[in-house]
Image (cartoon, rainbow, N blue to C red; front, side, top):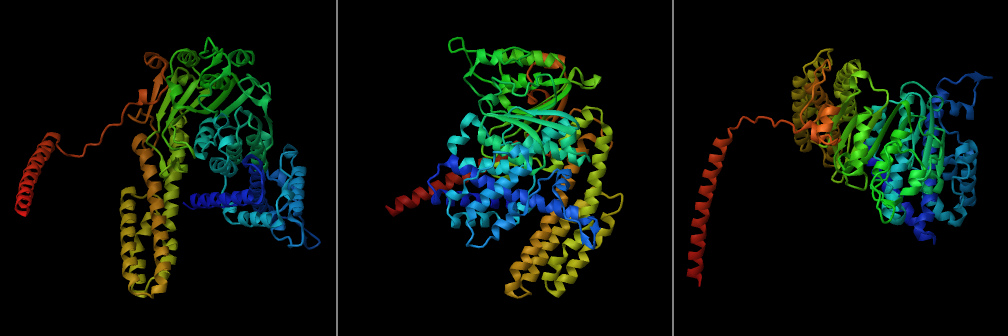
Length: 633
């Protein structure tokens, strides 16, 4: 919840800053977009710089009684961007009023470019166009702790929010939009990149590269030595953001932008058949692609999709993208991408291409995603995965997962997969691939996490216990004896759930009792502490719920079974019987309804009897009303 609140706050701050820029200048939305985002980039770079610096100083050797200063090479080894003093956000914020801030920010951008070859010429240096007062206010807005707490592809997310509010014209260009972090993580989790060449031919703000870098780093490897990143992005702004995003995460990459990066007509890096990994979230349903130019650009192992005979244009480019992603792979490559849900069973030439694709045996996993996963759009989508080096047992099989009803609601317009939900979906893929040991490791991680969280319950409740009156405190602390049993190596999940729910109910009672026993000015703080404690208990219940979701389907040892409404492993023959549809719902079916113990016919008779009685009472009431009306007249 904290991360969500912080992101929302950051978005609001960005809105305010953009309004300031608009009010203080005569620039268009596309002109003032980049200066604001570059300041955001600089603040985020500074946050990462301070984090890495603190890490480096922990075990820093000493010379002459002094700790040796950190150097640019130290940060490079940590895949982080080194910031000279005059490029650090704190330096700019603390500049005295008599020093021109615009020149200082321009100089800071120049210094940053000198630290990263791929940023050369990317960062704006137009800050002298704005008043000092305006720039100081912008620096103040971005100088908050929120930036230090948010990780991941924050620039891309803020960029999309920014475009949705201020630059509709830019946002509508080719329907480009930011890929939600949980979808990117799902792609990366299934592909499990370790080493080699990775391409994103529609790279946007670079989220695929960032998450891949994180995945490789978490495995204890250096992303820059293990991976070679290539990207194409037609929209210049997006490409600039991609380069900034990669730089702040310490990643190197070759990104081509502009007309030569239009993937329909150019293989800018000459990577057909050479990629170990391909990841993308291309614009959906693009029309008016010139068929002759697309054919000349190649990468079409299954031929062109449908072409309008009159205009000589491709009416829907979804299967151009799908063909490209396959064509870029080497003989052991893997691809994962987001695609419009309609593409899984579109007809005509699309269907013919899909048949050829299925018959290669390289379609690996298909996942249906529900509505509201995108930040500004509500459309559903599908995740496609190819694997040219599938294990022999799976060569003629495809795993279908229907995850449309599996998600966490962020707010009324946005859904996502939590970390545990991502792990659960990945676990299904592991079992399909015969990697049972990874499943068992996950269940052990669940148990360890639940025990660890339960062990912290007492300390998490201290703030609340200190805020209530003495009598309530004694009662509250006495309720926590169950914790000792909860942290044992073997624990009863159902019993733990009961105890946690009881603890929540008792905490609410303690809040109510203490509210009348303490001073009025202390009540608000007490309630906030109580609500925070209850929120923590609910976090434990959420982890338990995800643990039960997984183990109720596949057990503790991880025995794969098709689960109606969720997953099925289908053979190519079964797919052929369904006219080569790759829609998961066509295979997984519908989940079995839980038996609620109510006899249907008996309950229907009861409902009819109740309805008959209500109708009779309504008629009597209407008669009385009419009678009263006549008497009144």
